[in-house]
Every structure is written in structure tokens, then in C-alpha cells.
Length: 289
Ligand SMILES: [Zn+2]
Image (cartoon, rainbow, N blue to C red; front, top):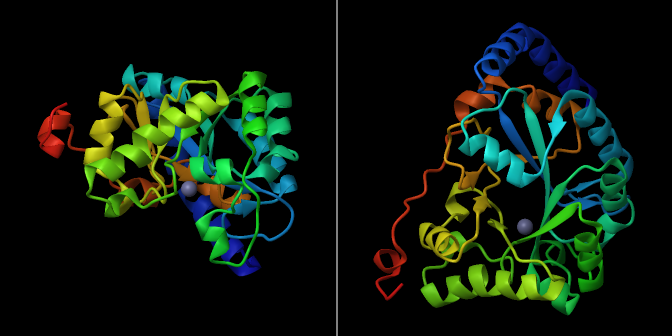
């Protein structure tokens, strides 16, 4: 972010600070404090794509987050949404895709600080070792995690592995139930078997409203997945639908993160929660459940 943009953002935060302080105080007092979930992708110090943050910046994020928020697991975030009660703004950390370089420093940093995280993995890439399709498009070769790295994360007890499809497909564009079943359910089950931990949560690739799919969401529910994550921004509040956890981008610019996580009134007003249509599976796909 250039100096001018940064100065404008700082001014905006300062101007809206009294509102933010009041909002936070009122929401906390009535047990309605926001439950915020961040998503990161890749923590590395070279080939800085829009979905990469440097190790130093990631540490700066953690320092700031630890100073300002309760850092809780995704399951605990979901519990606070479901029980309609949260006294203090809290944050959960997640990662998408499964980049090997995250194990250079970032995962160790989380473990050392005992910050829980959920790590959503695209199965085909960690099995084949091929780079992710969005990196191939950029001519980049950022290696995915190995299965051994994922097992090590599980063994550490601090990181939970979640599903992120087989091929990083845009599930919003898939209407064939067999293909959805493979991307969403079969891939998650295979991933769970490979890493030695059952998969409880799922994140939709790309995560915008157009990339979500109600048939896939119903499959997740039917197969016992506890919840799914989107990635279009947005806050969760106690009493929201706990099956759908909205996430905010872990933007490398700390000032942007500071703006969002202290509850940006503009973001609060502009982002509308996607409402899944929950049905029984046979109604959704026209076949036996
Ligand atoms: Zn992804």
C-alpha cells in the first residue's frame, strides 16, 4: 500500500474510532461481540503473490492479534456463534490450499505461541506434489505440503486439517452431483485417512458467494462435516448460522487488517451473509439420500 493510501486509511480509522469503540463496548456488554475468522494462504519471503505474506509480516500480525484479541480454534469460534454468546471479540486463524513454505516458519510460530489454526488442504496437489492451478497461471512453482508435513501438524496437536476439495475446483460452477461428491466428500475422506485425522471442516475454494453451492453444502451436512467456510469477507456474530463461518482475508497490510478487525462500519454494512438453502439431500439432488 502506498503512503497516500495508508494515510487515507489511517484517517478513516481515526474518524470512525469513536463509533468502533462504542460498538465494541455495547456488543461485548450484551454478549454479542464479533467472532472473526481470518484466512491466509502462503507465508514465504519470495514470489510475493497477492496470496502471500512474508514471515516478518506474519509475525507482526500475530503480535498484534495476540495483543488485541482472544485467539481461539475454529471449533470454539463456531461454538460462540451457536451458543449466541461472546463477551470479547475473538479471532480464529485458518489457511487455505496447503503450501509447503508455511512449514518453514509460520506453523512453528503458531505452535510456539500455542495459537490454534485450521489448515484447509487441496488433496490432489499434496498427493501429486504439483503446484496449485492459480500459481501455475503465474508461472510460479510454489510446492504444496507433503503428506508428512501435514501428519506432523496433526501430531503437534495445535493444527487441525480441513478439506478444500480434490482439485481446487470452483464448486459454484459444478452441477453434476457425482463430481461434487468426489470434490467435497470423497476428497475430504481420503485426506483424513492420509493425515490420520477425521476432517470436520471444509472451505470452499475462492469462497465468494458465486463459488458456494447449496447441493455441496447439503452433502457436507449429510456426511457429518461440522461446518463450512466462505472467503468473501464479513463478520460472524453470536446467533448467526453457525454452519456457515464467514472469513476475512489475512491481508499482508497490517493497517488493512486493523481496519477490518476493529469492525469497519463500511464493511459491516456492505457485506451480506450468504444464506444456504438447507434441504434433505434427496431433495437437492433428486436421488436417494
Ligand atoms: Zn484455495
